[in-house]
Length: 511
Image (cartoon, rainbow, N blue to C red; front, side, top):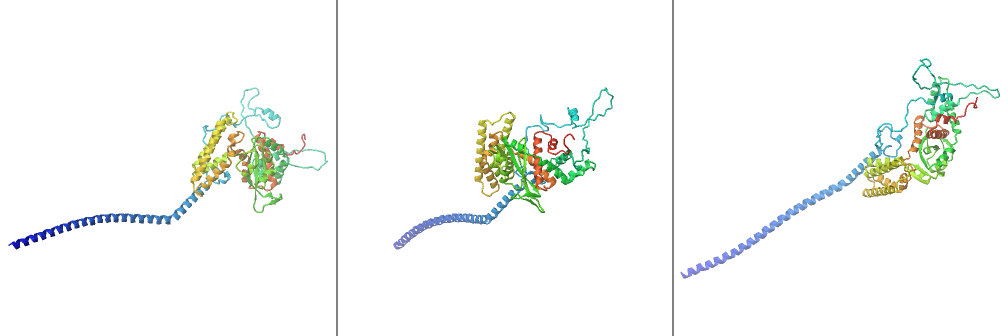
């Protein structure tokens, strides 16, 4: 019995030890289980991170691959877009937004580029009107033979009346017979009045020679048939009697000379050795140049558009005032100062703003227009100089705008849309600052070179009518006669009388 109890106690002890061992082992397993779960959690998070990283890497790699593959295409597209914008801007250039002449506009509809003013529409107060009137000195004109006064009366003498007038012209062919002693053989020639009409219509009216001969034939009821050679001789005789020395002196004694030149077509011109050459199945380019001011015009013809031709004209070489011109390099070598045309500048700035989307150009354009408006206001009110403080403000604003243009240029990539246009304009305004500001520094200097433009406009109309000049002598004759008549017009002289003074009379005075 005692043994049995001991066995039981021993078994209990063994069971207790086994239980304790198992409890320890269980605790160890629990700890290992926690570690495994923790490691599992860590590994899951690691997997998540790896999955996210892999996705990012795949996405990044894909984006890099796409970007690398598309970069040349995008660059090509950008290049094409810039080229399209450049070509559209180039095609949209006309006389309203660039220095291109109006003749290059073709049939393109050109918008009105006049700046809106505060003036009312219609004729302005004080402008010279034009209406049908009876001259107050009619009887004097009748007595001098310039006019006729025909009276048709329905009332008896002494009765009250009112007069209705008709103003008309009477064209009559006049045959003048001059009888003399038979010392020389008899001759017949055209009279000075007919010659003046023919030259006037050819030079001022810009009528083609063929139509001019037809016109004279019609108005004389077929009694006069003037040949083309005769009309050419009329103009040659008139031109040969012209001496422009006085007009040149008037220009040299002025403070400003406006100058410009325009190309013409001619079948004949002197070459560089001075020998006349004739074009075959084509025409030559030559140039008519104007030297003018408000009262005088002198036109010259030159076979080439060179500085040597200016020296050959021998006008600017003797001039010591201000030369107004359109920003041509060769003209800067003459005169004491040069006023560069602001009209050309503002048109080009308008083109930069509208066609090349450069807002800076619009600001510069507005600045120049404001300066010109101020000058016009000063001149209208009798001022002869710009107020010093205001002038300094204009100078300072010019420098600020120039600095802004240079900074804008720095932000642009070379060869991109508008870069070259902006670069050229900034460099020009920097280099020719004194020339562009001369009109506000010196009120005698004009803002525009429109005077020269107007003095050359007839040349383009002449070319449209006649196509080209047939001889170099014809070009020179045209320039000389037009110089005299344009000067007479500026001085309010009668053009017919001015031309009549150039035509040799058929018979001595009194016969």
